[in-house]
Length: 103
Image 1 (cartoon, helix red, strand yellow):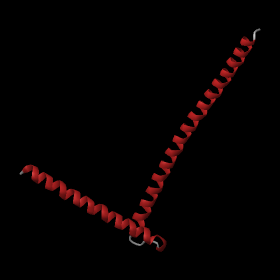
Image 2 (image 1 turned 90 degrees about the vertical axis):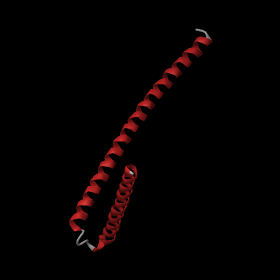
Image 3 (image 1 turned 60 degrees about the horizontal axis):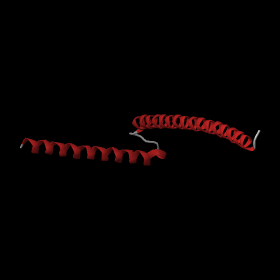
């Protein structure tokens, strides 16, 4: 066997090994990405559940909030009022636009 054949054989084996490593790396990367997506979905589900729980708790206790939550209840009330105010502004603007279109 010539030196060229030996070197070519070594190169061929190295290429196979590298290909195998790349394939395994791609598999691991795909698995990590899939797991990351599943993780983010579960976090989003938990966030929704916490929000639902908080909303239910707020509705059941908004007339007599526990002292330790009074600040949060006030912030919710202010936020709800701001939403109502913005909705009213948008409604007025849309009505004005309709009037202008009809003129």
